[in-house]
Amino acid sequence: MRDIQIELNNNIVSALCEAEAAGDIVICTTAPQQTASLISEKIRAVFTGEIFSPEELLALSGLISQAVSDKRFYDWEMPTLIGYTAD
Picture 1: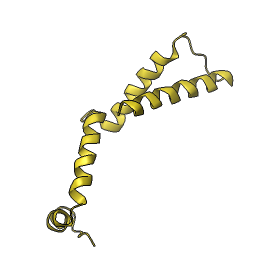
Picture 2: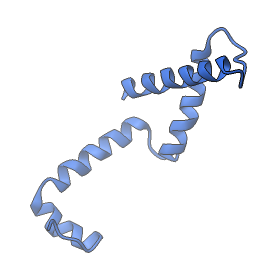
Picture 3: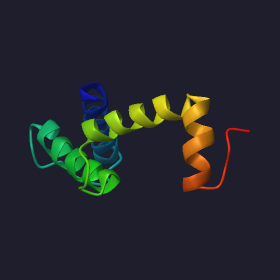
């Protein structure tokens, strides 16, 4: 998960620098990484709804993937939840 955060920060810095080079905005700091980190935190808060951390979402997705890969779980539990079978 840390790699995704670093990649997001780097992409934000890149986008800010591109916009600045095009004359759209001016970055008022010599350390745009700090600004990118703040923006990244706000973006992640939107996607997690401030309910789960990115690490918790990753763990939940792993649990879901494991559960639905087992046909016994899918055929027993999923029709109860959403009305679908594995087929």
